[in-house]
Amino acid sequence: MRKPKPRSIVFPEDRFIQSFYDRFPAAQQAPLDLASAGPPVARKFALRQLELVEEGRTPKQARSIVDREFREAGLLDLPVSLVGLVA
View 1 (spheres, rainbow, N blue to C red):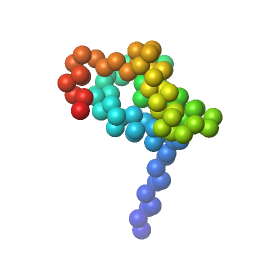
View 2: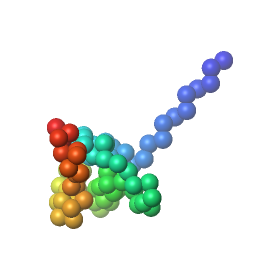
View 3: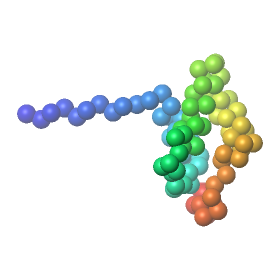
View 4: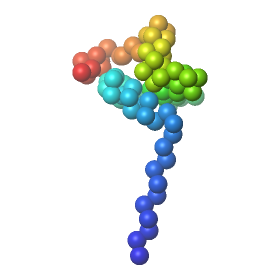
């Protein structure tokens, strides 16, 4: 008798994280700071976007707002070694 495959754990922000990586594929290659207590940029972006969606904005509106906020804060800057990887 085969045991059933465990169900996948899906968090509300997962779709926004995937969308972030679709838009910024080089971000998947960026090194993670394992000494940092904070989440990676993709998760920060997705959590902020989710927050705005829960306040009543559409996902597209929220993405535009967060994109602008992160660009102004310099959080979407890619390391020089990854610039050539951006599609």
